[in-house]
Image (tube, rainbow, N blue to C red; front, top):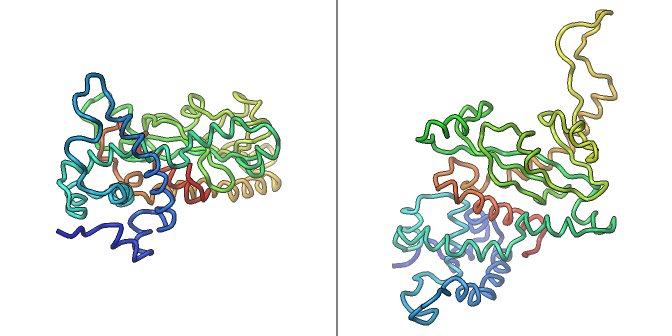
Length: 314
């Protein structure tokens, strides 16, 4: 049976290839070369165990080539089809679809610029020139994104994961993005009920000196709690009503309004990055897999977005 999806067929249609994988053909080829160069060592490490009877590599072989398994992983992340449909598209038993994908995920993480690697590089930066490479303009844009999950069966989890903002059960991930849109830091997922600023207080990045975090008005308190960060946050209206001279008490000064507009314009970069993440429908739709797999997924999706933005593999 001919695969409906295969590298040989899709690579001849670059636009279709990008739609189904999120990468250009040349970007996929570069990533695949990285994966192939590390595959043998990765397999030896994965299969090594005490008292193993057969040699590494013995036993049942993968039905798909390494290239097509990598393609299947990307198509699954990009389209988030069911394993039944993915099995049909790649002529593979549906029980092996997620099994093959999960076996390959750790190796893919080694080969793409996941936020953890970028963050480690940023923390080693010492000179202004090195810091500028990771944080153009010496600014870091911080925001959180939420994703819907199925309604938990456990009553306690239903309460802790219910987001009043989204009015559904969610998990929340905090992102730190630089001026180019690359993801420099990513938190592990938090319960949807937690406030963005509460997540920040528990897992904020350690930024180089003189790099200023830029946040939205939901991070009220950051200037008092973390004065050393010198955070940039919009001015907030004081409230309703009128002052003693009749003027509106919630009016901001022209300078404050101008500052808020400029800050909002600058913060668009993090919104664009979140939009790019959600184009991978595994992160944009209701997450159907187990939550223990969630941070692995967001790490890989973030690394794929970084790969496109930064133009280099890990």
